[in-house]
Image (cartoon, rainbow, N blue to C red):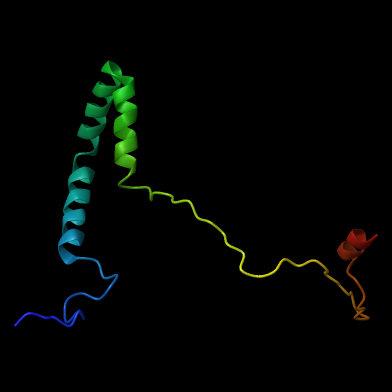
Length: 104
C-alpha cells in the first residue's frame, strides 16, 4: 500500500551522504591519484596546442575541488544604535608598561 500521508518513513536521514556516491568518489579519487603523471602530460599537450582550452579545463576541474561561493545578504532586523554611551570604570589595578604607552 502506498504512503499517502506525506511523511517520510525509513531511508536515510536528511544530510546523510549516499553510500554509492561516497564509493564512486573514492574510486574516482584513486583513479586520479594513480594517473596523476599521465593527466599532467595530457594537460601539457592541450596547453601547448590551445592555451585557452587548458584554462577552461582547469576551471572545470576546479569545480570538483573548490566549493562554489554564493552571495549572501545581511538583513538587519534590529533598530540601528543611535546613542551609544561607553563608561570606563577605573579598576584601581595598575597598568602594565605596554598598556601605559597606549593610554598616553
